[in-house]
Image (cartoon, rainbow, N blue to C red; front, top):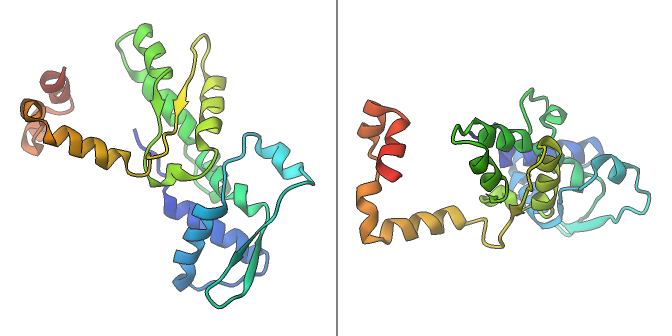
Length: 197
């Protein structure tokens, strides 16, 4: 399963939060707001506690024209949409619930559920936001009963899907496991089980 929350949603929400504080951005500045997100945003382990934290550390960001932006709670409010999509007006599940539901839909038994819960790996450019691995582990652990949860957020996770695909494709033995589009359209998702396992 995939999430309907994209990096653009987080960037747009960050832009909205900054505009609510009086900063004005045109759509041309979206790249700058994207950079602010990458450089300064983080996922809070306890969102409500962080909101009340009076010792919160502000950060500054210098715009190309030399103006300094002061970034406050927007740093953790924007990425909160990954876990609480309602903050950006989306009535969908957070990424922790999507991961949990995906694992529990696997009909290969509780031993497989246990193994999958211990081997959650995040990848992709948007997972580069600081703190996402710890928060994801905490949120998934609250949903499960009796399973150990482990989430890995490797440093190369921004490009790990490409690296893995390249390594897989370079293996001479990988050819028989490839699923062509025509095979998938003809046989459906079951073709993956036939060819790969």
